[in-house]
Image 1 (cartoon, one colour):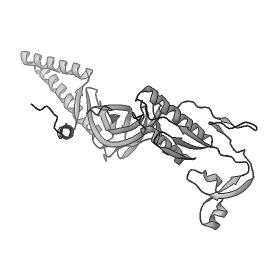
Image 2 (tube, rainbow, N blue to C red; image 1 turned 90 degrees about the vertical axis):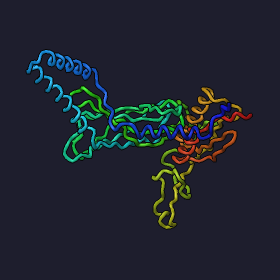
Image 3 (cartoon, rainbow, N blue to C red; image 1 turned 120 degrees about the vertical axis):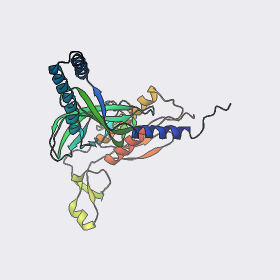
Image 4 (cartoon, helix red, strand yellow; image 1 turned 180 degrees about the horizontal axis):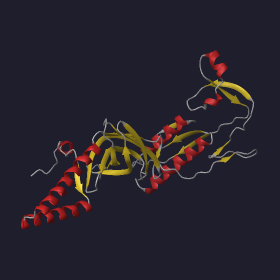
Length: 333
């Protein structure tokens, strides 16, 4: 018998997962520890009422059942109309804590929402159907047609793409007997940069030869020596506005004694194996590039198969970090 897997098996598996997600109930109800105790107590009162025929026990049983119904109705009112908007930070570094903002909105016109817990969910790295909670936040009360902003600390251990799937919104309002939750799909994708290490950059002195990690920084208050065209990443405070109006394009003031060295960060990719050694090399390369850019140098990046020209500014910082976030070792020597 041919045991070769059919090429459409993976497509069918993905389709079955999507169908399973659509078939999930809109609400998930789980009893808490107090809820289980209340269930046992209700069952005991009902059993005693049936055996004894006592009207008072029937009255207590009716009140307890009404208590359960009221809990379900009020918890539904707390979840209905809740929407969440995620605001990611501009840069996310691996193994570092960054604050993520969640704007939680109650779209109901008259009914406030109470005791709402929001969990941000990410897709598992192994490609399974499970979701990984990244962080959670709690809101005690959201007024009708109001928005509350809360934050949680995001800490992702590895670099690369982070696939965000949505939110799990839950509440135990009003009595804490049940935990009612729903899943709100809000897919998004973020790029996690390599973690940064401490990298010291020294300032060049007179009579010293500049090494690979040496940057000469211009002294403040130096006189203007000329103008040049504006480049992406140049600070706005150095724009010469009068000359820019005359030319019709932005120009930058250059100062006497300004000396911006060009540095190149090298990363070996060929003949390397995936693992801790390669990840450590990527972290060192990212740390060196960021430190040199912060010191004002023009920084380039060179691997065994790619080369980035030296430049400065935030555009170059984003370009280099985005490449290092996705770079992979090349096993061919």
